Length: 621
Ligand SMILES: Nc1ncnc2c1ncn2[C@@H]1O[C@H](COP(=O)(O)OP(=O)(O)OP(=O)(O)O)[C@@H](O)[C@H]1O
Figure (cartoon, rainbow, N blue to C red):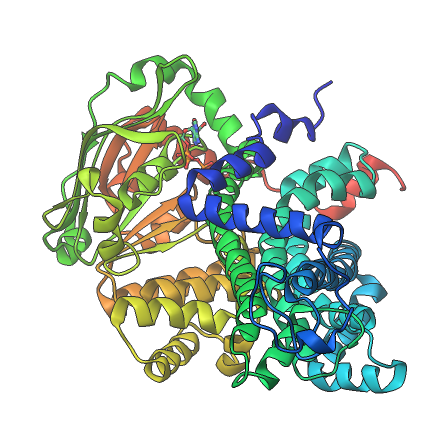
């Protein structure tokens, strides 16, 4: 028996660990930062053993002694060998930072997993506790702890770890909340997997990437804070640390300026290396996450509700499959409504072929020669059964084909710009500015680590060159325009704090924020519940009319097409089989596939029997 949970494993999983390391070392910054951190790590382990002197041994003869052969880095204000202190301090500082990191990781990740997955009372309590910890001024807490338990670098860092835990908690909570409603998690549950197994197999794999990146950043922060506390003289003076050495150097800056240099270099280089490594890891992991999202979409497609409709269509159209590739496209002439809306063509796709490279060197073609014209200001529906190539066509236009996918033939012309030949740089001038995109899954398209406001403001500043204040004002008015009840609160909220419908409104606000000429919406309501779907579609229609944008609406729902679109193109097996004004196609669908698609959805069928009849038939339950 094939269980539902087998699905994700059937699709080849990229070996995340090895490929992450390979991707990091492929980039010079990755190699350098990793190299520096490895050296720091080695010194932290062997430092105390290779230190030439006792780091705490003072000598009056050596007070502020300059570098010499016996003491290569000189001696400090108490006549202690600086090199020995630096080597031992590396161990103390690194272990202290790790203590804070591990404390934050354990508390934040475990509580985030439990709260996000099981919800219930633990969710309420941990959310309350997180808010409380975040409201506490960290430095005051650290000073209070020091006053109570005395100067101890370990207790200070343990406390700091607790203060940092909410950063992990929120990250993990948001990721788990999004993932636990994925179809494959439900499928795993249905097939009998226990919660522990689901968390370790499905959930942890999703949150692993952000946790790794966050850890590199938090390690850098922990080193900086710990050094800061020691620098302020709040640490344990009997233990050599980078911050303590910096403090000593600062006190003697006029007498022996070099004393400050060594700990400052150690702190600076380590922190910079951690930050750069986090950046490189983010770049590397983002690609892995993208691949995983595509995979999830494939799984969702295989198990989604549309499957029921397409199965019935497949049954009707089974005999058409062979002819589909060779049949000419049926074109309908414009009717009054379509002609009234028609402007010049804004997007012209000609004979588009999209393929995926296979391991054996061959190419698997998934779009077989699509031609499509989108006119200025029109709403154009792209409809077809699951797997017919709608998304691949849309992604080809957006230059967002998943890894391995490429345009193998044809052309895409967007107002004179050949997108099929455009570089990533060319695309940055177009995508998100002149072509907007509204995705299928709103939640997974918002970064859980940033507030909604910052995710709207940043693109506005970048693409429109607005000041922070102007961008904030514009974002707030956009949120209001898309029907968010309390724009200010949503602006300051994190994605996990809003509903799916609100998240989709936020993404719609983002997509229209730059007043694009064309918006591509890929099944924008599929992930939403039915009442919200209607509202979001109304909003899309209003915004499109108000801003005269062209809208390419990818959908599997003829009802949506009838409601919103001026023209529609019907896709089957990577080809467009019929295209024309919506009314013409609804009135006289000519292609058998279009007719069967309409028939499957508009089929009146027998009326549902009254509830009483059902109960009588089924007997008392
Ligand atoms: N990364 C990939 N590698 C190989 N084939 C792929 C990949 N992504 C999609 N395909 C294939 O391309 C074909 C078209 O997929 P596409 O996602 O465009 O379908 P769709 O019409 O948008 O369906 P849905 O409505 O379910 O999203 C499918 O047969 C699919 O298996």
